[in-house]
Amino acid sequence: MDRMSPRDTRPAPVGPAAAASTARGLAVLLGTSGVLHLVRPAPFDSIVPRSLPGPARAWTLASGVAELVVAGALASRTTRRQGGALAAALFVAVFPANVSMAWRSVRSARASRVRTVVAVARLPLQWPLVTRSLAIRRAS
Image (cartoon, rainbow, N blue to C red; front, side, top):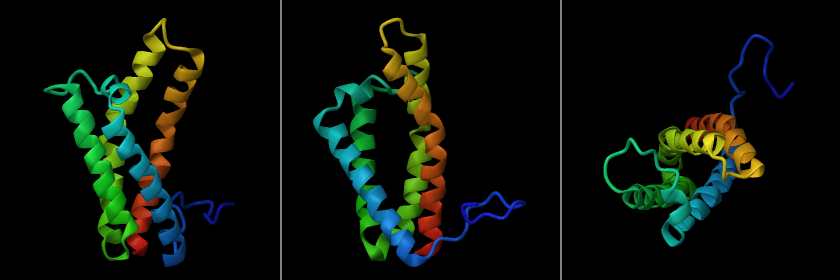
């Protein structure tokens, strides 16, 4: 039962070795995404919520830089604890863009079924990213 008691829905504590491994994986994920935001920003511009002030490109580039900073913090043992907290905050902060992308995809006649399914399926995946990031913070 995935190391959880029937009455407790919180994930079991993560040890330092598992936290380090998870941190490296998240660092790769965020580093890759951060680089993509900077070198191919157009797809990310299209999912910036329209309610945010200023140009979408500025939000895309800022998000890419934030992802690279968090990836670096997670990759370093000395900043891993802060990196876990920053990663959790980042995953919460980008959630509105993911909702926007899913909503636009569902409402668009041009969006493929695959794009729509992927956009909607991503939404519940944010929760494990947040909880793993917080586990890294606790264990580091």
